[in-house]
Amino acid sequence: MLKAVIVEDEKNSQELLKELVEEYCDGIMVAGIAGGVAEALEAIATHSPDLLFLDIELPDGDGFQVLEKSPDKRFDVIFTTAYDQYAMRAFKFSATDYLLKPVDIDELQAATTRVREKREAGGTDNTDQLQALIQNLRHMNQPLKRIVLPTTNGFTVVNPEDIIRCESDRNYTFIFLNDKRRILVSRTIKEYDEMLSEYNFFRIHQSHLINLNYLKNYTRGRGGYVELTDGSVIDVSARRKSEFLKRMAADS
Image (cartoon, rainbow, N blue to C red; front, side, top):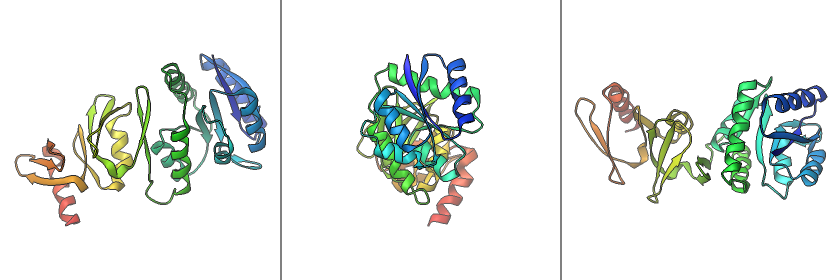
């Protein structure tokens, strides 16, 4: 049974989330509730939770201060928020779950299931992941510096510029890095297409997303194919050829 602490300033929201967790989230018990930063830090020290439901706006600060000030970061975090799009982007880059208010039961169940499965697989040290989140949140209006890649047994933190390409494997994605590592990530290629578009990535095929900074050659054909600096040769789908050539012409 995983222990959870709810950090939420509104009494009604505290009680509603507690009821939803206890009724719909198997394997999770609510060990404590806090209404602000100071109370949250005390609850974390008292209960050593496995999971933190963390609101952003708190009366004596914000949820990010809870993360920064907590000396022990061996808990997972699910944000509960009505926060802006830049924070949503930072959450996605940091592979951090968030629930928009009012909380949807299906999304709550899915988020808590991911936490439970991750911890059952032995993933408990979230220091690097939370540090990446904090860093990204401090630069929300700029290109984000670190991306957390959730793997089957934990996560890896990388710079988006170090990613050469992404290759779909059904509901998973292989990430190829410039240090020759290949990482299997438990996210779809569609999610990385959305996250990495501003970093000069282009989806040349339903199954392939490439970093154009590593493009070496393009050879024409029905769709043609590209060669990347790591030696990869990848088909360009006929459907994406026109958009790809326009993009390259615009960049030249």
